[in-house]
Length: 261
Ligand code: SF4
Image (cartoon, rainbow, N blue to C red; front, top):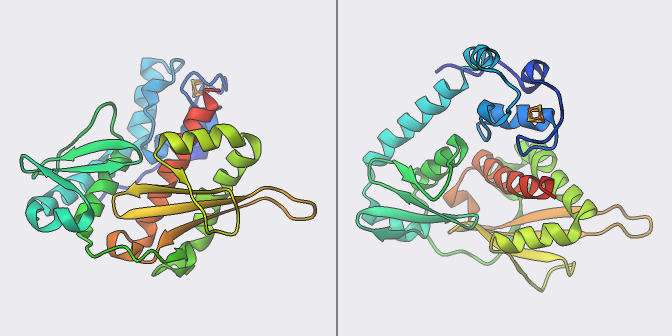
């Protein structure tokens, strides 16, 4: 498997650095990060000329490993009988395909692993959905909430989860509380009760992966805080690393909308 040969800083150095936001990111740096993660295309920057773009693409080599991984996962998906897994993962079966709702969007996954939806699909979402199907989790949700650190292998990756997921969400709430709430509601979140803050938002990131996002605003000597909690069955449906991937997608969605003002 080929690996990405460029990191976000190296890519940033090759961008026009106008920080104009025309690529839907606030500045060139988050754009570089999104390209490396496969959530944005170089063509979204109108200031990259054909030759410069070709040169960057040649050094990126990022599509190779993603496409290889997607092809590998599709190979595994082909061997799965959708009738056996649909109910367990909370998907609907229609004409032999699985219909899965992920963050407010409906995706159709054909038996050969091809994924379609309205609008653009990033490699990131393809990998995530194929992982979710391949994991083929089943069983009822427990209704008992756990932190990311309580998941299997969650402790090892807890600092990444804090940095990539909880910290950015906290900033969104701190800086644009109403817009962040509106965005969560747009993605299907409902306010909920019974948690130690009134700012508690329940939403399904995938049919069997509900989360509750808790936000405490700054108060006197206490700093603001965000905690994201999961149903205690989460490990059955996705591994800890994929869960970071999933919540990062939520963060990215909110960030893009907020950056549009
Ligand atoms: S479009 Fe994006 S990447 Fe291109 S110069 Fe503007 S901010 Fe930078």
